[in-house]
Image (cartoon, rainbow, N blue to C red; front, side):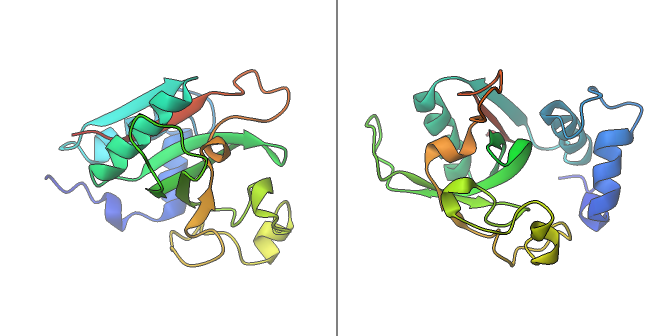
Length: 174
């Protein structure tokens, strides 16, 4: 492991580097390619893997592999409240290998709080900031910590989203 000072950087400085650095690979705000690029620069001893799939089975296999390997998973989502958003999957429950399980759930940290419509939160839009739901400071406490979502809750699913039904995962692979 070769320290690069990433842990000492302010969250806003990291965001600016990911989204404004002239060397970033994509001009799209918060693009996974930019996140992967930043992580690779600051954690050169780790191998980052980006998975894009329309297969729920492949998404589950990748999630379980990453999490069992000891690493959380960044995922790009869309739903009725947002055209694009990133959440962090930190765990799962009720996984049965090679079987579909209606009880399979993911533990998700969401910087906007309980933002997914399935969580029935009223803290979204402007309320997400005034309701104290944001984890933008990098902390892990608040309504966005350890929410439980089904697999579909971490996919692109907004009506009219050309990428609906797709899972986008970014994590460390061993």
